[in-house]
Length: 306
Image (cartoon, rainbow, N blue to C red; front, side, top):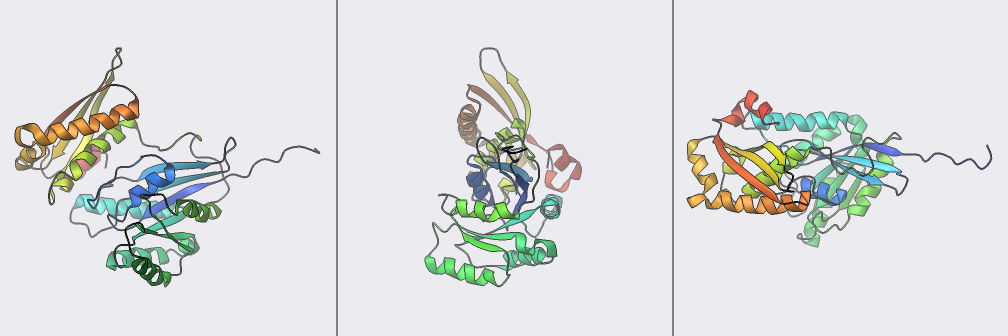
């Protein structure tokens, strides 16, 4: 009929965010989503699951929905957990409509970056749907950034974008490169959604984040966290019970700290963040437990949700 309004064409799809450990993938996802949906740390292998952050464009009528899938950093696995993390990444690539391949502008392109590039080039259907994101330009020299872009350009992927995920510089261009790569289709999540992760998972991750930069050497990788119970009481207080798992008795003392100092500080910082997130007072009960060699035990890895 004349004057009848044409339906809006909606583009939607899944975008895998890949790269070696500690290049800033999670910070990039948080920046694109506009809020924290995945934890960040200077420690490699911070991300242990595939985490979906949702970006919906168009108000009041959505025109695009980008589902960002933050993945663990690809690395040479040392145990069952490491093998599973790499498998998660490869499985995510198989289901993605496009890829954000993140490099660290402060470092030279290395063997790990080239390994990922070769993997992506081997997926013929992806070649033009890979956007290379050169991250951390806020702390890299102009010469190093240019060097990165030139070296990575030999791969011939669809686009190359220098950004600072931390400051937000360049993120709009990343979105502009992604949108045309997505197929037409329905929204996968309600327009107001920012993530698909349940609150129990996010609580556990916030607690684990507070441990990461306080624990030395390899111990951060031996820590796993699981939310056991959430009790919303009538007086407005939210009681949350969280288990913190380590692999050996000797690690338990380090995680607790002298006189409980580490556990107390982690608990205080996590509680403050959770109170902002939930908008209510929180009583956070942290309990440290030993689960011997859990990184090498498939049954425990699955029980902990990884």
